[in-house]
Length: 268
Image 1: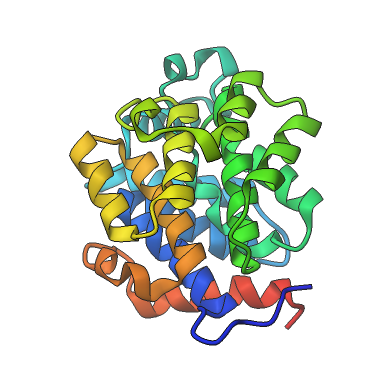
Image 2: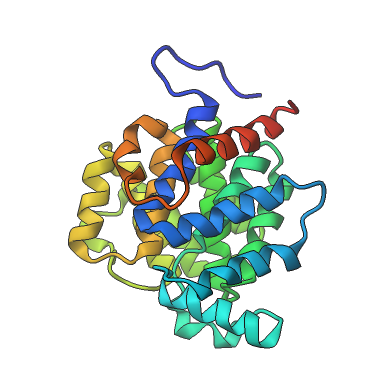
């Protein structure tokens, strides 16, 4: 059961809106990918073929997709199937941030959360580090959406019990004692991106300051988007209002989608 909202704390819907809005920190195309998935998740049945077709439309117009995403989508277009795990762009796929709507929809259903995040991430990011980074991101988001500040134990348990890569698990376990200089925010690999995003949400209380640090360090779009989504889920949309400037989706439509996903959690 979700605990009652503390006076002055953001509501569940405000956190859900913040999680989607935070993706804008990584550019409009990542936000659009997640928005499409959110819309399709609300359909009576998820049609993966239709979802991927809508994702592929992004390739036909000017976009700011990270290279690994664009490569994966092009592979999907040419082969009709995801790339093989051993061809996952040399591990430089980044965090699969398009799974954020999965956390909004299934925050109260751990089995669906883990399965949905893993399988939907694997469509574009089949490497083990990337798929499990997506699961870790989704679990952390779910915890924050529920109004809890501490997500390390839940993420650690999800990775440990599902035999995720040991190196990724150890990064999460060490988060409370990891120092900023130990991070590699500019790295393109999913594990480093996840670590930076989780670390900032654990140690850096000012969202805009955290995002600004990532920009200064040259962090890739996926790391900035994951960080923004986590900050939004923790502090609500008001904390990230300035990130809406370049969003390709009107803010009202984005808010409506987030509200609909959050309401499904409560059966409304």
